[in-house]
Amino acid sequence: MNMETSEENRERKPMTCAEFQKVLPYIIETGGNDEEEAHLASCPVCSDLVKDLRYIAEQAKLLLPMRDPSPQVWNNIQNSLEREGVVKPGRARGGLLGSLGKSTGHCITFVAALALVALAIVSA
Amino acid sequence: MVATLTTAKKTLAPGITEAEAIDRAKGGDAECFELLYGLHKRRVYSLCLRMVGNTAEAEDLTQEAFLQLYRKIATFRGESAFSTWLHRLAVNVVLMHLRKKGLPEVSLEETMEPQQEDGPKKDIGARDNVLAGSIDRVNLERAIESLPPGYRIIFVLHDIEGYEHNEIAEMMGCSIGNSKSQLHKARMKLRDLLKTSRAEKAATRR
Image (tube, rainbow over all chains, first blue to last red; front, side, top):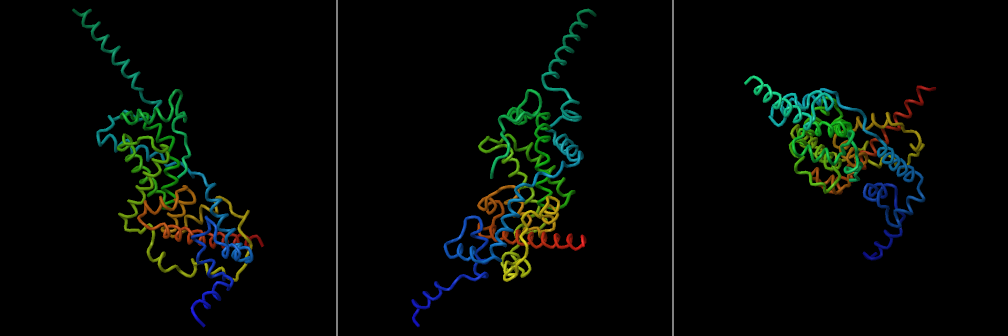
C-alpha cells in the first residue's frame, strides 16, 4: 500500500467521537468543516454535548452583577485617598449629599470673607 | 469586549451625566469620583468576586481597583466606553494579585495534561438528558465558584464578561489556543457539576 492510498483510506473513514471532541474547543464557536459538521449531525452524544456547552455559555451571559461590596470598601478608599493627600480629610466623607459641592463651598467662603470685611469696617 | 454603558448619556445625579462626572473626577473632584464609584461598584465587585471566589479578597481588590482608577482616571481618553476601560483595569488588578500570590491564572498542568475527569472523552458513548431548561442562576453561580482557579478566570472573562480570546490571551500572557482550550475544559467541568447537582436534587425529591 503506498502513502497516497493510505491517506485516501484515512479520508474516507468517518470521524469518531474522540476525534470530534478533540477539535471541539477550537470549532464550537466558529463551526467545523464538512466532516465535523457531518459527525455532529449524525452523533447524538456529541450533539448533546455541544448543546449543553452552548447552553452553559448562553446562561453565563445572562448572569448579572451579584451584589454591592460592603460600605467598608468605600470607607477604606476614602481613608487611602486622604492618607495619600489627594483628597482633603472629610472632603468626600458622608457622601455627595452630606458634603458641600465646589460651587456652594466657594459661595460660603466668599460670603464669610465679605462678613469679615464688613465687621472690620464697623469695628473701625 | 462589548460596552454596556453609554458614557455620554448616563445620568448619575440630577443635572450631571457620567461624562461630566468623569471630566470632573479627572480634575480631582472627589464627589464625582464617589458618584462613579456608586455607579460601577457592583459590577467591579462582582467581577472580582467571580474571579477570586472569596468575598474578603474581592473587597480588597475592588478597593485597589478604584484607588487605581482615581490615580489613573486622567489618562482615560474616551477611546472605549468608560465601563470597558474600568473593567479592564479591574481585571488587571485581579490578575496582578493572583501573580503575586503565585497562583497561575492558566495552569500549565491543566493545559498540558488534562485530567481524565475534565477531558471530553468521558462523554464518549454516554448519553444523558441535555441541560437545557434545567439550570438556575444560583446553581450556575455555585458551580462557577467551585471551578479550579485557572478554569474559572477564563470562563468569567469570556462567557460572563464578554472578552474575546485574543484579549484574554493578551491579558494573561497565554496563547489564543490555550485560552480556547481552558474555556472548553471549564465548560466541560461546569457541565459535570451541573449534572451532578441536578441528579442530587432529583434523588432528594424521590
